[in-house]
Image (cartoon, rainbow, N blue to C red; front, side, top):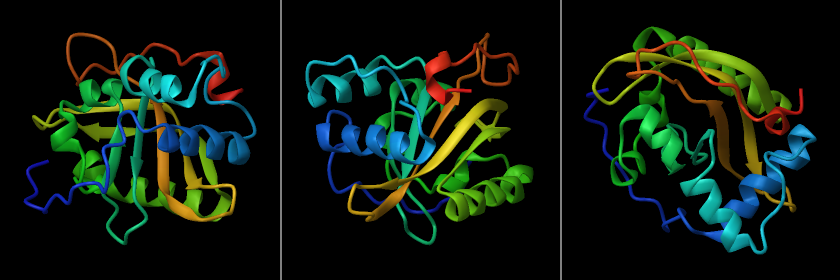
Length: 180
């Protein structure tokens, strides 16, 4: 992942943005048909904080450009890939996939474009230091607001566990994440 592609900063810091958290949660519910996680927060701000800091699943989002750039990565995703927030945001999302997994990643994106979401995906990803690891139980969906405006795509995944990113075993996602 040493591609010198430029990073373009996100228009706002979405780590604690309640509107962005609501877009993630509502678009998932509308397209996938279940809640991403139980709606137990007192406010949208509390939901944003939990999704970013405490969620046990990796959560990523990229914009809708031709070469999509990451606009969101929660702490679990940051730990999985080895990037800080500042390194992740604006990074081309294609760089998250291992070089020999690019075609597979492209097929996933095409499936999401066609159906609105795709679930059950697993694939190889690349850590910042170049090590390869597997993500599993991935659900990717279009980020669409209630008016149908497209804002990019998001993905939730089961993070790898073990001593490093090359570990292929993983802990299960909460059963309410995919509803399957």
